[in-house]
Image 1 (spheres, rainbow, N blue to C red):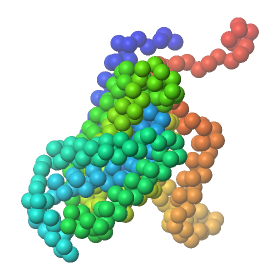
Image 2 (image 1 turned 120 degrees about the vertical axis):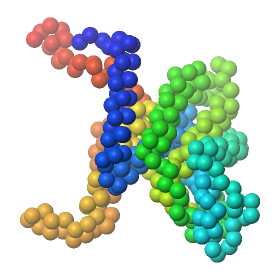
Image 3 (image 1 turned 30 degrees about the vertical axis):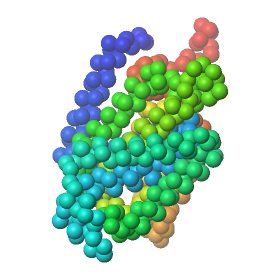
Image 4 (image 1 turned 90 degrees about the vertical axis):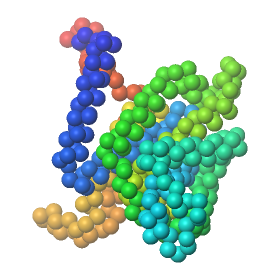
Length: 354
């Protein structure tokens, strides 16, 4: 088979992008509300998986604080996009802070502001925390996420406390969500292919050797952590406006665990792996939802067992991990050359013995 030239690869990429845009157009017009929500949830998990993979996969930092940055982004965007009337309805136990009551922005500037606030917090947290390594870093970032959740629960006049915020404008449409996912993927591709991306991988593989070669290890870590926090804040904002409601209980460790699961399943250190893993996990979780209800197998009827879906899902994950220990993609990237590559010949054919 003739190897694919760069020109043909570019044309194939443009055709794939056009096909994806056409699919989103058809989905936005013809899919029912539930299917469309699952599709948009796939896009949000793509953003979140890429943000966590930037830190865990490409920089080698074991961070478990993503839920905290998502919470900051979700609350920031919600408070900036809600109208004064919506805020007054939500804050009935205690009035909202006066400086927030009439503060309102369009969705796109509010989304950028949500990412910026999360990035600023990531920078402030990362400056002391990133001097730690391995398990200590994981514990510190996990503690930070819990602190954020407790603060959100107890700042009644700003976040409405444990009641959360209801009636958020449904701005997370199909085009908005998948445009953000595409921008994050393009950013990751250009970042990884740049000299800065090579510095990230050098820090991941061997910090001492990277420092000896002139790489500012701490600066690379803090930049990666800040960029990841920005994307996590954007993902949290999109999730809030997709569900149109947020509360502190949404942003627990289990949310970070779900994103980490996507990254590991897709392949740590693989951009396309994160995309494939996010779509596969989200769709599979919804496809297995029928297992939680009563089952009629024809021969035997089984009563409803809530949680059976997670048992089956865990078994499937164990099978994948057993046969693909580095995830679906490992640290490789899906490319046209990989898809066009012919199957390897058998040993006899390789040596002309067939």
